[in-house]
Image (tube, rainbow, N blue to C red; front, top):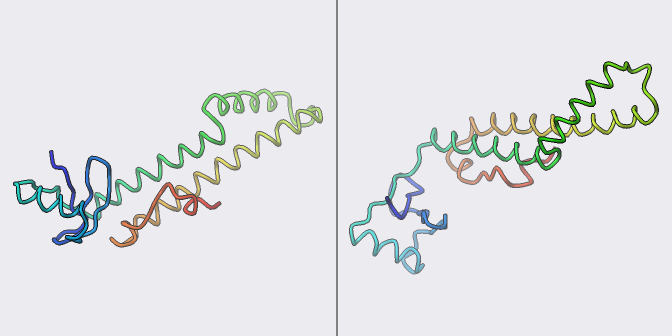
Length: 151
C-alpha cells in the first residue's frame, strides 16, 4: 500500500498523506513534502490522482452521507417511525375530529418532515451540481460544510 496519493496527474504537485489525510503542497522547504521526496527516492510509489469520474462518485457518496447525517440530527430513525405511526393514527381519526392538541402535534410533525424534505432537496441539488463541476471545483468542494447546506 502506498503512503501518498497524487492530487494532480503530473508532478510536481500537491500530495495527500494517506495516514492522516494531510494535503502537502509541492514545496521542498516544507518538511512534509521533503519527507515525501525522500520516501519516493527510497522506492515509494504514490497512488495516482483520482479521475474526475472517481472524484465525482466519491463526492456524490459523501453528499448522500452528509444528507443522511443531517436528517438523523433532525429526527433519528425511531422518531421518524413514531411520527409516521402517529400520522397514520391521526389520518384514521380524520382531520375533522382532531383536538387542538392533535392539530398542534400534526403541525409539529409536519415541520420536521418539511425540514427533512428540504435536506433531501438540497442533497439532490448538490448531487446535480457535482455532476457538472470541473476539477478545480471538485477539489474545492466540501460536502460537509454548512454553507453547502443552506436551505
